Length: 256
Image (cartoon, rainbow, N blue to C red; front, side, top):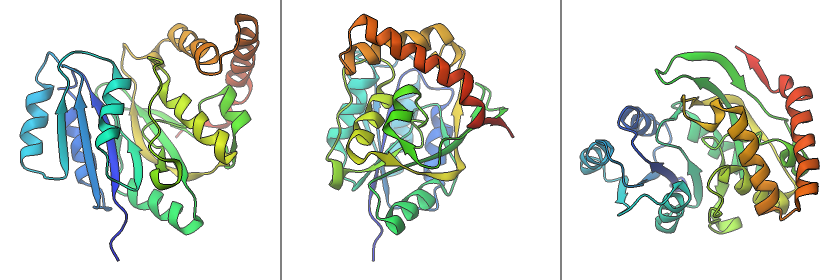
């Protein structure tokens, strides 16, 4: 019996330094029934030509070029519209998967008859060097826990499109993954991870992960725009978010 198809959604923009390794980490998967849909957001470097060359030699990789820079949300939704898989997975153009990532997560989903899961992951710098940090999450993640902290790494989340349908990314420019997981957890109430590190998240100098101020700003936008809370309620939620970072975070993020 053939294993279910996994559609991998990858937006790219000026990722010439990383995209070859990212694609290779997918090609090296022990689980081989996948399609990778890469949507380039009008890169100005060699990203597009690199992807085109690789896709020409691998029929499982599909490349779409946007005419103008439109943001990762448009790029992800464009890829999602083309996806044919039962499962939807996400991998940004600078992150990496470990070889057994899909195998272990799809096996976990099917064995436990679940529509969604994620995993732990490790952090690396721009040069691919380990930052000696593994990001973990609660073994039974609830909607309330997720509300105050995005425990789910975008590069680890996988959901069943037969169960949820294709969930389009919101118009919020940043923290779209958090909104996606909140949408999922609001329906299923809780979810569990594959409790091991299956991916590498690259922290770049200009990313929101590297800027605490930008992180707070974009989180506040989620409370205001997605949850539609007024300023006062959103500020209270941010206090809860900050408390979570200070008190709970050491329990799920640790040195290797």
